[in-house]
Structure formats: C-alpha cells, structure tokens
Image 1 (cartoon, rainbow, N blue to C red):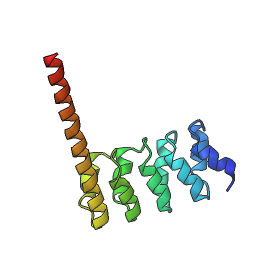
Image 2 (image 1 turned 60 degrees about the horizontal axis):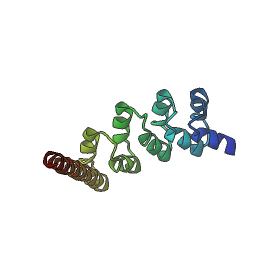
Image 3 (image 1 turned 135 degrees about the vertical axis):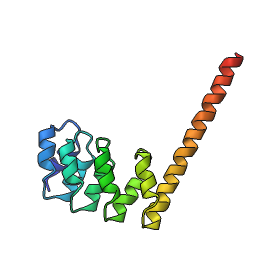
Image 4 (image 1 turned 30 degrees about the horizontal axis):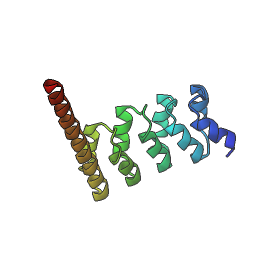
Amino acid sequence: MSNIEYLAAGNQATSREHLAQLALSKEPKVRSRVAENPSCPTVALLALAEDDHPDVRSNVAGNPKATFAILRMLAKDFCLNVRYTLAEDHNLPRPLLRMLSRDDNPYVAERAKQTLNRLKEEQSARRKAGYVTQQRHAIG
C-alpha cells in the first residue's frame, strides 16, 4: 500500500472519480479510508457496503452520506461487529436502532437499547431546558 493512496483516500478534497478508483484498491486500509470519507460517491459506498472486510463495512456505516437503504443493509450484516458499530451510532435513524434492539446477538441488541435510551434522555433534557427557557422569558 502506498502512503499516497492512503492519504488520498481520506482526503475530502480528493475527486469523486479518484475516490471511486481507490474504492477498488486491493488494500483494505485504503478501502476503509474511502468508506469513511464524506466525499465518497454513493455508488462507491454501496459497493463498499458489500466489501469482504468488516472494517470497511463498519466505516461505511459511519459515513454521513450513507443512505437509509445502505444502513438498513448493514443493519442486517452477518458480522456482529458491523451491527454493533451501527447500534452505538446516535445518528442512526431510530427505525434501524429499534430493529437492532431486537437483534439475535444480545450485545448488539443491548447496545441499540442503550443508544435509544440515551437519545430519549437527551430529548427529554432538551425539552426541559426549552421549558425553563420559555418560563424565564415569560417572567422577564
């Protein structure tokens, strides 16, 4: 693996065309960097979501450009590490977190439940903070 390929794969300024080429690299580390790059084209992300290496698929799961369809596919991945990565992602759509909370693997299911609970707590705290702020403005 060349350092130049590795660095280019992680650089958001790398062209979409070059990222698509790097997504075909023989090196899993290069493909992993492409998979996590927000500039990666969706078509390349879809291909990387089916990569042989679970680390590559996990990095696709963390990419902000991963579509719902890609994330749903990864939520059904045979590798529990990929599903666990999704289960701990607070940005994952709630329907997929709920799906993962019913995963056959108890670690994945529990992690998804913890993530959902934390999201509920954060939402409740924001509501309370908004209510307090509204009360202060009404008084003042």
